[in-house]
Image (cartoon, rainbow, N blue to C red; front, top):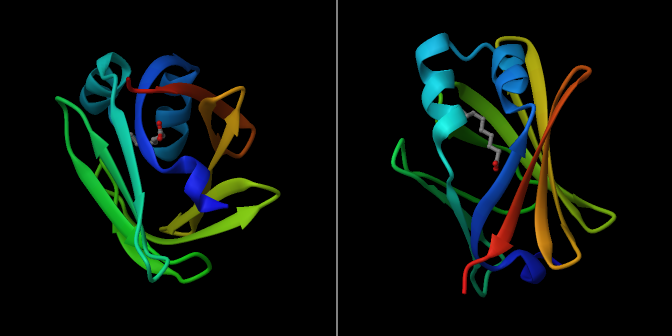
Length: 134
Ligand code: DKA
């Protein structure tokens, strides 16, 4: 099921991301860059089921490697140190990040051949859309 995410994706739209970044505590300067940046997402999966997700942009490159349902330590692009777990729920890749007593969730799904990333913090939701890079 994770296989459908494998490949290189480029962001084509981002809605409400500034409010999402505010909700998770990202400061003004980083939000300005975050709002301007159009990252690529690169997913790979190896024979052992380890998923690698790279985010590549002019702002920052990040990489996480994980197995589904196995918590791991993540350092996010905005430098939060989170305890993260990724699960697969009804075909959605659900990334839950916990830090400083807070929790946010990024749900990724494939819809009409596009990768939709829904970033959720409380009642604030940002939606970012990616298409496969040719
Ligand atoms: C996505 O995959 C969502 C990425 C969420 C990053 C939150 C922090 C960004 C700070 C610049 O598109």
